[in-house]
Picture 1 (cartoon, rainbow, N blue to C red):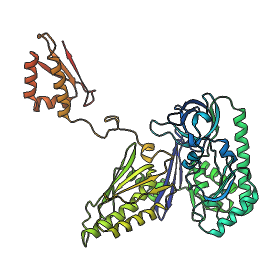
Picture 2 (cartoon, one colour; picture 1 turned 90 degrees about the horizontal axis):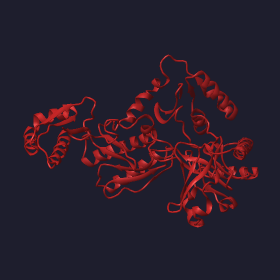
Picture 3 (cartoon, rainbow, N blue to C red; picture 1 turned 90 degrees about the vertical axis):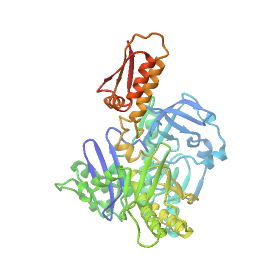
Length: 502
């Protein structure tokens, strides 16, 4: 379902009337992942084995030594059947194994002022700039073309050995001038369709090289296609019943794209003309609102709490109102199983990435723990992003990682609270009052007595002092030797105050 409006485009993937994938892109802040830039090395940091590269954005991009192309990478000729990246991992990054083997220092590869061709691997997140790589990868319908290395890979999701061998043989026959990964969508593809895909990607790479050579200074050379076309390229297959677009121009653009690149699916594209909003037909807006909340209720009466911090995402599972019907262990297992399904679902919708810690309810039976872990991993297999799950710890915690490429749903649709500055809390009135009293006591050490002290503060603080802290106020006035007045400032923050002695 593709919902297009002047300022933003939303793409929802619905399965069994349930939202399972969501992409939101705003015109003012489109994703940079996959876009290719002409960059200039600003600083080389040997201590971090990384460098900062100016690619024409507000913040410098970050290039790690493992993501720098070397002559050694270019000379590799590995035509093997190593598993390729999952669908979301189309930007190829250097591996730790290659790093250890090469042991090349960043200062031997890059110099300040050097002009290089780079591709964005991760969007800027928080205060961090974009993560970039020199290993260029160009995704097509059936293939991912990697012009800087020689490598043949087959998607892990193509499990049939006969089909893997057939694809490998066809790609080798095409003799690609670079590396190729056959995508999941390439399963069952003919040699002709693979050849057409490869020809298109070869032409695209030649155009990128030409723009790089002609370019002056830093800036964009090649941008990724719009979010709705990316979604079709990556997700449209035989399992999709229909593609519904609610905008006439977008419908025509999508129709042309499908007709050109995926003609067998052109009859699946529909133009939505209903009076009610497209997303309302499947309650998608309601699901988005639910996924922005901190607490998610489960059908049984239990609930999970999702907290996104800068370092990691923490998920806590609670039984809530669910009391079960048999014994305690069965109640806990049922809640944990339901929570595992919802957690896997929420991670996809929220697009949470990085380190994720799940605090399941403690289970004493080893069999129950094993059953839960198998179920959680089965649920995560549906995820298009790469996930790695570790065994449950003795404390009942599950550590996992999920590849983070784009900002999460919360960071895309929300901003830090302007009142608490994103802390999630503010100081109690008694705390602010005591800070004022401490500041006033410091005034008592100054010489001179005949004076008046005025405390400018929020009305709640003034009310608290006069109603609850009268005794402390009299004590401070005796120490100062003069009276203290509180003046209410309507525009002040609850924690803000100013003391003026005249």
